[in-house]
Structure formats: structure tokens, C-alpha cells
Length: 85
Image (cartoon, rainbow, N blue to C red; front, side, top):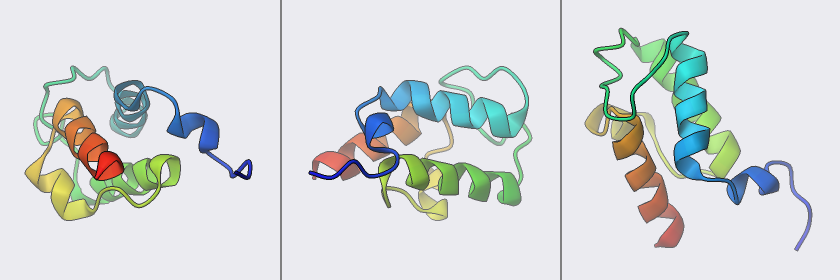
């Protein structure tokens, strides 16, 4: 197996990685169960979150899934399901 960029992150805890991405994009502290919409994230910021997640874990989520699963916890559940299935 090659040492592709991001491979180390792929083994990291998805909750920690996603939480960090959302906090960085939102610019505020984020609770894992707090809605991205309650944080005031707009569609451009959600696209940034989506792109960063896919950079870290591969193509595991799309923008529509973020709208349907708008918390860190829900996002991590989707990522885990996509990666295992």
C-alpha cells in the first residue's frame, strides 16, 4: 500500500477530524450535536466542509448529505457508513 497523502488522517478518529474541520470553517467552538445551520454556516461554508472531509477521507460525502445530516455526530455516522460499506 502506498503512502498517499492523507493516509495517516484516514486512520485518525473521524469525529476528531470532522469536528476540527467544522470549527475551523465556522470560526467558533462547535458542539458535536449542534446544527451547522444554527452555527450560521452558509452553502459556501458547507461546501468547504464537504471538500475538506473528502480530502481527508476520500469521496465519502456530498453536499446534499451535509444538508440532511447537519451535525458533526451525524456527519461522522455517514462517513463511517460510507467507509465500511
